[in-house]
Image (cartoon, rainbow, N blue to C red):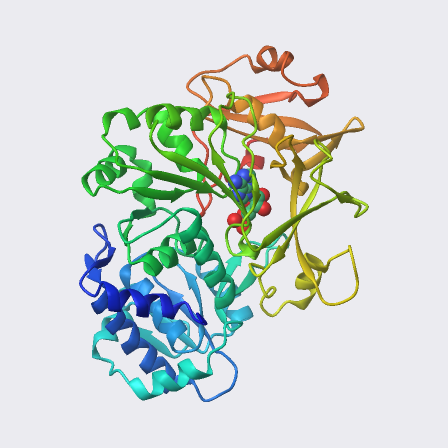
Length: 500
Ligand code: AMP
């Protein structure tokens, strides 16, 4: 029985002790580490934490302030083996945000590097000292015995609409379940060579890290700033024979727009993406350039452990079509309700409603915030016989004729204009299909305003005339040289308001 994500590491160490677990070709400390060395350092750190902290019968929160690195991964496994849970913020997080997180989390320990010179008046362990800690096998055994799978693994902070970050609590059980699903669905083995794009504080990285460790594969870490240079990234993928990636659509869009793909001989067998709408125009470009590669659209919010639905891209899609987010992952249920909480069945093709999720993937709520938890995690409205929680995603979806879900964007991006209900995501996907357009974001401020990224000014009103209802055509179009992206690599919609 798998009760801890550490069990995945333990098994891979036995099978592949000398195999490279992680490669950080661009980092400042380790360049690469095999499973055996990685396990030893994780156990050293876990022993030290368990010795220093485990005097209570509740788990302790541990804050990690580190850049994406092998040290960061040792910290994740070390903390979890010690019976505690982690929150990661990277080294670029503004001080004010770190303080807000500390205020909510009240961490018992900080893990960081001496070079970063953080001072938050917390008991601190430094990565530079990991190697000097002693392994205490007896203590680790005791901690492992006590561990249960509903214990927390991590708390990831997402932005909250009120300006206070929300700490999404995720248990071992959810990550174990998700990792089993990933490895089975994508048929992963020790032969996988993955290249990680997602920052480690973003839940897409969960797939990269834990699936890779479970099957004994190798994960290459790519620093976020390097993604501004597609040629550098692509030549690395070529050189290292990377055969699987799981990236955000913004990056795939950017790479398609720069047309760099054709200059490289890539070994990619599987391309997975998640996090935002993937426009078919750029996806078609990837599909045409890599005809032997499998493409998968994955969907899910942080609150359900990264992914709850997926779609294998097999049939043809027109550039302006919306790519389905597909069907539920195994052991997960997707439920759609209209605004009066009437259930919408898969037979009701085209009827829009909000998506709710049910399953082991569900977060255990927002850390230290029962009010927000109650609003987002609700009793299944189909019965009241026992506690059966659903996560309310805020995403507007509808079934297509294949029983697949289409996602039309956020409920909070849904607007009413002259009595009509409009999804801005729907407008964006049509505009994105224009050949000259690299990316689009629409916002609503008394009227629909469209920001678009292209080399020159375009006559989009004429382009849209026969594609959208008249009331859906934006009133203003603002051309940008490029969009500013937020920390997760998505379009930063907040800064767009500054242009108006
Ligand atoms: P996050 O919690 O940052 O992962 O953001 C989750 C939100 O991103 C979801 O609620 C959706 O609005 C959006 N999202 C994630 N994956 C997809 C996808 N494949 N297609 C469309 N929207 C997505």
